[in-house]
Length: 302
Image (cartoon, rainbow, N blue to C red):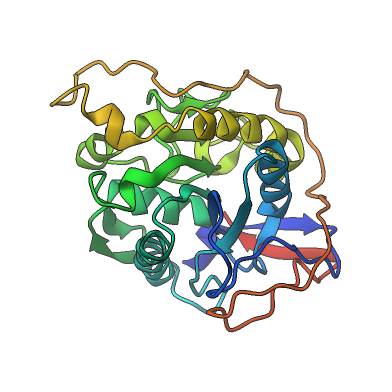
């Protein structure tokens, strides 16, 4: 049932747009961010505030973003949407890296988009309730694109798995609705030096909590901290490929290698954020990038 994947997200963005969206013909930037939105959000969704925070934090570098394209709507099959997003996301990383081989790549996904981003790096597929998702391999850490990934961030993911070295915040020891099997965790282990998985213990999505607002307000509360983590990764030119040279196999008891952000309280707040104005849109996207143009409330997937 589609309803098992849904909660209602109150939104207060209206008529906003993000100026940092990349076009296919845009000049290459030092840091390029890929965003995967939640179900039924307009591009870029709640993560617009995150883009502004990251690009401001690394202001010495040029910075922009693009949306990972997939049919994230109520009338789309949920698992098919995930599969499409994973395939498109990996292809978009390869395409940008081919065009701009010196750019550092940052990938972020929220809610359903976190599911997409996780599967991009872990691999994925299987049966989830009455939803059957096609299988995919994760991005190769030794590929040219993989070598340039300096940060991967997931927020409130149903695939969140307890006690992983990249887990961050109070939900670190909890499982989401569909925790990952060992083969996918082993794949993610290769990326742990560039990976942060955000989850607060009261988030229904990633920790089985009961405070919906704590799933909605990640970007209001934590964008600045996440931006500082990305800044550190970029300045240190951190990559999973270089880290993997230090060990030839996965240990049974992995240790924390990515720098965790400070544990934060789970304060309820509305899902409101602001961003700089602009009118740029991705030429590969069928819709104009106009932010979240619906005021009031909108149903979105977790």
